[in-house]
Length: 598
Image 1 (tube, helix red, strand yellow):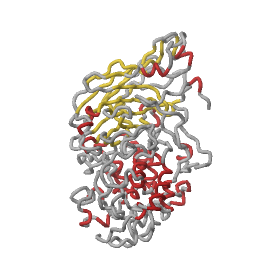
Image 2 (cartoon, one colour):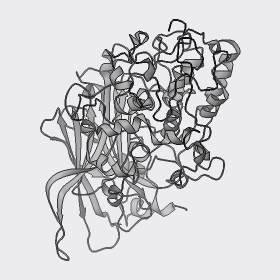
Image 3 (cartoon, one colour):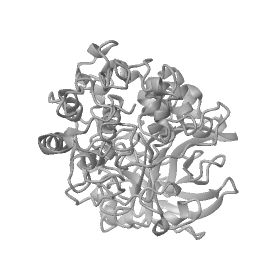
Image 4 (cartoon, helix red, strand yellow):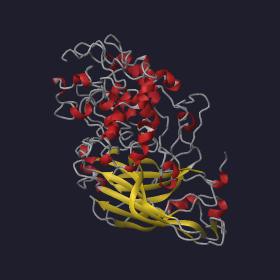
C-alpha cells in the first residue's frame, strides 16, 4: 500500500480549473423526494400517510433546529366541500434520537387531533365566522421513554385556504389575509423546552416528474417533463426547537468542540399509528375504536421505502421502527436495485434516462499496490472487501477494530457507502473525507466535510443501523441568500472542498457552505432525488478518491468524461412550483382553491 501515493494532479493548474467548472454545474437546481403512496396498505389510508421529513438548522437562528413532518399527499386545493385535514384516531409522532447507546427514542413529540362542525346546518366549510371540520390538537412530549406530558393544548389548525370570500370577508372568517391567519396559529409550548409548533396545510415541497419516474424510470430530460405535485398541498407538523433541548447533554451549540462535534448528532423520523380495532355502527351512529395503537406509516431518509425496499416488504417496513430494522434492509442498501440500471453488465441498457449514471466497476485499476482490476461496486461484487483486514485500514473507519465488520461485507459492495448514509450516518474518519490532501490515497486523511455518525445499539437482528434522517446540529446553516448556497447539499460542499481555493488548501475543519445539506439532515431546498441517484452511481465514492472507471494512473485529472456525466445528470424537473417562507414554519402557504388553474 505504500506505493498508493499518486499525487492529485487535478488539484492544481488546469486540472483544478476544469474540476471547478464541471463540479459547479451541479449548483442551484432544486428538487426533492417524498413518500407519497409508497406502500400498498398506506396508499389506502392517506390521512396517516407520512410524505416527507426535514431537519435543518434554522437559517435565522443558529441556536435552533427545525423539524418538519408532512402528511396527507395529493391534496387538491379546490377539493371541497370537505377539505383535507389531520385525522382523528391517528397518533402523529416526530421521533428524535440523540444517544445511540440508549434504547428507543430520546424525545418523542405526539400529536392528536380533534375535529368538529361549528355550523352543521350548512354545506359550506366556512360561513359567517364559523368553520366546519374545525381542527384543534394536543401536542405531548416524552423524554427517554417517560410518560407523555402535554406541552400544547387546544392548538389551532388554520382553516383551509378555500378562497377570498371564505377567508377575507364578513360572510366568511373576516381575516386580513390567509398568511396572517396561518402565522397566528404558531404556538409556543409550555414545559421549558422552548419549542414553537405549527400544524396546518402547506404547499407540497416535493417536486419531481412522477409520471416519468414510475413509468420504469423514464425521466423526460429536456422532453417536456412535468412536476407531478405542482399545485398540490399537504399537511405539515413543524417544530422549531432549541439545540440545547435536543442535544443529549442539554448543551447549547456554543459549547460544541467544533462544527463536526459528534455529540451534536441527532436522528429524526416520523410516524403515524392507528388503533388496532375500528367498529362501524349503523347509519348515524358513532364509529368506535379500541385496542393498542399500531404504527401504519413511518419515514426518515427519503426514498427508502420507494426505491430501496421491494414492494413485498414495504408494508412490513412501515410497521416497524428504526430500532428493530430488519437486517434485510441492510442487504437492500448494500445491493440497491437502482444499481442494476447503472451497470451495463446488468440492466444498464433498460433505462436510457440513467445512461449518464454508471457505477465504478474498476476504480483505480492499475494503481500499484491495489488489486490489478481495481474496485468493483456493481451489485454483488466485492467493492472494498478485498482490503478487509489489511493493515492499511488501521486508523480508518474500515478497520476491524473500528466499524469494518459492518462496513466491509463480502458480496455487498455498497455496505461501504449507501448503507452508512442511510443507516448509521457517516463518521469524520478516513476514508470518509474529501480527496483534498490525500495525495492520491483514498485511505489517507483528507478534508473533513461530514460527521453525522450515530450507530444504534444492536437490535434483535444484530445490526447497528436504522433508517433516520441524521443531522449534526453543530454545522452552521448556509444563508439562503449566499451565492454559495446550493440545493445539492453535501455534494455541493464536496465541490467547494475539492476545487475552491478558499477550502482546498488544507485538511483542517472549515465551515464549507452546504455542509448543512442532505444527507446531513435535509433542508426544504435540497434536491434529494438527484443527490440519491448520483450517490447510487458512486458520486460519494468519487468524492473521497475512488474515481470512475475512465480514470487511470496516467490520467492528468480525475475529472473524466464519466465523472462529468454524473455531475451533469438532470432529472427534468429542477425546481419547486413556488418559493419557501423566509421564517418559521418555512413551508409555503398552501395553494388557494379559488385560484387554482390546471
